[in-house]
Length: 263
Image (cartoon, rainbow, N blue to C red; front, top):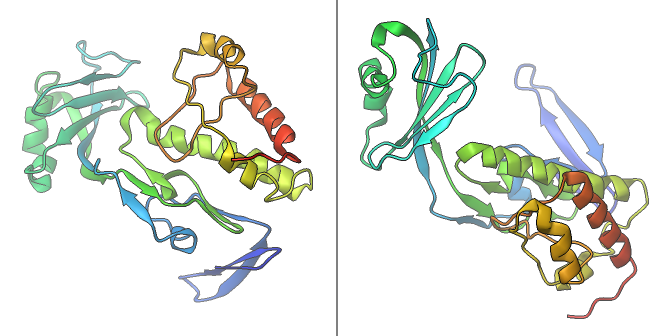
């Protein structure tokens, strides 16, 4: 990976043939997961937020859907010993996720006999085919910076969290939506790559945690044009729709484009 003042370059090796090729672009975005290849080119600073979790993931194919389990909705049972998440996936498949403790042995919990015991409250061993039993480990980590010149990281490459209720994936989708329109404006010449960096840095940050119907009233009460959400912590805004937030953010961007903002 290399970059100059006007472009970035990535060299790709083909493991099968041993050949290489080079790609050049105005910017490179590494949305390449928790083991990101691009992240070391952006930052060596990764903070451990001490939220590591292990889950036993069990996928089954029931021969008949059990009456005790909903067919279209999931649930979480918050038990002290083994909290469990249930979610129906593509019919007729069902998934169960059991949170493991520090002293739980992964191999023991991946054994069919253990899975039969864990699922016995809902299903008898002969009522389903076991398709997968795997223990996964997730971390909560935060990269110290998400940009180095023409190189960016996004999603799990920038911030990891256990996948509770899909929030890890949702945060990655938010990164993509947030970054895509900004890069599009830069590469089409409608915005400069660094014109607003100082202005954004000096703005106070408003974290909106109110229910979405009240967002407009909140903005009016605070004489604000938009709510700016810090991307480096678990903060969020509930809006009346992504289009409304995008429009407000674009309006603020235009306002800041030539502005001088004092600290």
